[in-house]
Length: 431
Image (cartoon, rainbow, N blue to C red; front, side, top):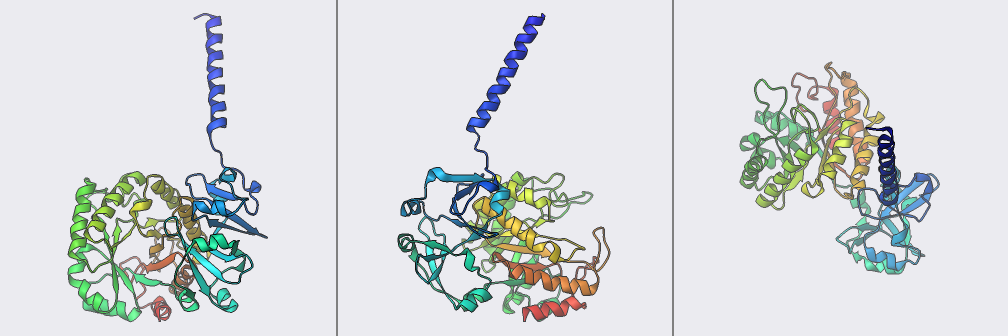
């Protein structure tokens, strides 16, 4: 090949690269920087079509979901052409708000999505009660009468409902006798996690004590294998689950698998896309057997890796196929004060980034061992304090509806609370 041919080919290659770069600049919607967002701007995440209006009060940043596209016609300054696409990190800087009041009015409403219509619930509290339940006056948006009247009026929200939102105290028990059920009742446990095989000899006894059940289905680890492989046939596995649900119509809560982001439970390579396939098949089977059943996703284990795994689940289309997001935010030996709230809010914001703004979160496993392992141990006194703080922190986050402590009895790893200071702390919390 002569020198002129080489130069010509290099020239053509460079032109091709330039064309690709120009195309990327012209046709790729790049998220804008946080510094260009101003009070009253419209934003959306880079991965979902939901549009929010921004409110900035000092160092506080809020975002309100535009429930109805017709709202754009209610305000002359709003325009589809002015929506700014932001990155996940920028989107996460803004706290979700659903509180509004009419311009010049005193009534504060909470807006609730219901299709494209939306509902409004008047918050009937004193100023002191408003503060006491953790609501922020700065997060209240001002709307005009036309927008207010466009929402269906739903039931009034009173202080009693705001201050006593539904919250369950769960635990992972090893139930092998009536004594174990008695102990769960003594602790004030409101829900337990069982396997399908446990139902036949525990369900009626637990129900008679007012204790709910969440059933978790996961395969056993094969002999000689380092972890649990995914089912070989997702549909067959889901049909087996469907039969269990059909045989137990009085059990409402069903959890699909456990910690699929860990090699131990999705061996040998965790794969969010494959888990979503199993979740979808299971969700459809469960709802077919019992339309009123609540489907809980598998608890994602750890603090840092699950962030990307959750994003991958949403990108693979998981959102319609679970009713509750489950997390296992173990952080031993660190105190929950050092990480738990920030981590939960981070995961909550990933949900919001993908348009999943109202789905509850359950912590279906968390605990601290009093016996040394590879991650470290805590003292019995620290375990009790960390249990108390875990529940207090969780109750302060609106979407958290349930925390399962792992576990009731020791099983060789020191995670149990029976006979330790944590037992009395748990009782005091539930009482």
